Length: 338
Image (tube, rainbow, N blue to C red; front, top):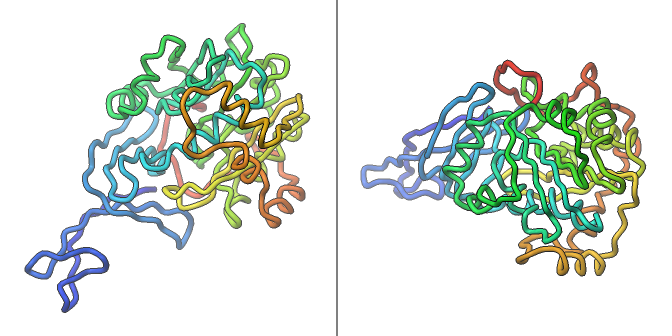
């Protein structure tokens, strides 16, 4: 869980404490956010201010103004996104699937209450409708109010915001979608989302709601040289049981203090050259990506030898009874899904 601590640091004889300047009396006032990434390993960074803290029916939420990463959204003690580098996560989550699809018109987002995923989708010229389904209305309202970068997206008439359990909403809808995106919180023990990473959910809830040639993509947790075995490898193997073509890829996100993973899946081939990828970006997307282009996607979809070997050898299938979790604990909540 993340902690916010303010403390007085004692300076050394030179009037300095670490890299920070001390006050004239030899003390330095500092305020830090600290997150426990795994046992015996914590990540912390300095804060300018705490903009908001609160709790909803489902989760705890905080917005921090951090020195290295700008505004940072924290949910249940886990950093969700930071102003300086969230574009890496959201471009990687959205654009590979929408670029590979020849003509994506209808998109369904599971989660995504922050609005950044919708923002990136709405840059695609072909998109007629985006359904964003998040269980926590207070988080959505909070992000509308505080995250100025997404205000235009929240006002776009193509965006329909639904406050509901993602599984219930997806299963109850009659229409199907060209792309379904899992922008869910990490599968944390005690958290609201782990059941939406299971084989049964992918097979009986997601796949039937994809149009012919449809693509599913999900964030899949840490994908570093050591951390990928937490959930990334088994989510990959689980999707391989459901879809014919599965593409894992990963990129370093500085504010996450790790490499992050995404997995794209379809029953149609997912093959584009770097040049074809770039041509489709030029034809499909308004504005310029900051991170992702054809060569970048070619790079991020080539995993390291160790991770490739691990994924090839993974046998675990994610079910409700055999769930794996990333390190940390979510808050207590009343519902079973996000």
